[in-house]
Length: 510
Image 1 (cartoon, rainbow, N blue to C red):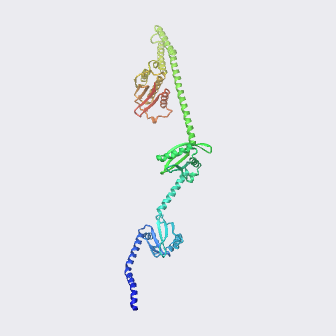
Image 2 (image 1 turned 90 degrees about the horizontal axis):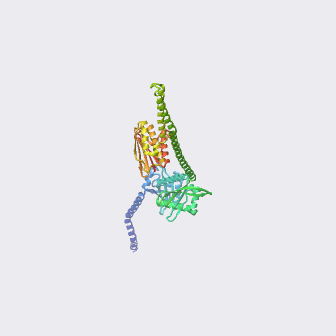
């Protein structure tokens, strides 16, 4: 009976044991699957991961850890593979800080640990981030990871270098810099780098704009800041302000920087403005002197023409008449002595030579009179005078001169007509001396309320940009023509091309 009772008691336990033995293979299979799954997860990560037990022994690593150890000669798997004591490896490799940090996490003294460290290779510089976090197992442990942060460190280094470069640039420029930021409703001045804040001018303007004193200056800055943000274009303006009870002139140049920021450079242009004012004053004085000189030249030309006219009249009234009387007297003497002297008598010949000399001198005096003041200009007009003068020049030089056009209606004033005649004289003198021309065309026309005169030759011409030095006679002649035209309110233009001749054009209002 006891045996029967015992058999009944043992039967459920045996059944449970039997079922457990039958389920063991399935549980082993599930454990292997979970382990494979965990390894797959570890191997899918690109960071280098190792799992340590409570003693610092490596119990698992991923493939990224294995590849890095093999590539860098870390003694894998003996030193950094499964079974190796990672804490001892760190201390042997002078990585005491890493070993102490991991140990602190293992002991529970720290919840986690991170450390950035360099790990350079012969071919490149590299940086890594070591992280240690507790592993949730009853026996304790820690997960150690190494992440390559080389790109981040290089970016940080590039940013530091750029910041140093910008700071050096800001310190080097003489301008004060103001940074402003818009929050959509208002513009606020933001803190500047130390190198900029230490500039008194920047501090002063920042304070004035923030305090809105003076209001006009503050409004100017705010207006141009908003304009720069709205148009995305640089704004510039000048303003006056007081610095240490002295007046200064400044130039502000504003450029958008980003979506809501503007950079303002302020430069002291007081000295430049003073120089500009002096230059303007000097230019005004030069213009006044030029106007005065032109008026003086015009007055000298008028006096010269008056003297020429008076001298021409004197030559005609005195010397001309005296020569005429002398010629008549010589003719009478020769007529009275003709019966007493033979044709071969020296006295007769002397009388004939004297009469010829008087005639030639009279003609020369007449030419001088005409050059001094052409008499037909007063009575017959400019076109007739130009025709007469052209014939005289052709007779002396052999250059064919054609005069065409029409007389001005109403007639030109004496001053304008005489000035245009003198310019024509100067132009023809230049043609004869320098142009090597064979033909000249002089044209006089009316254009509305203006009269237009041109003198064009077919000579060698010249390039206006390659004119001779000012000291040459040709250049002086060109300057004289321009001055004469401007003196009567006209304009003189000179056009020429090498081998294509030269044209002098004068336009003047009647």
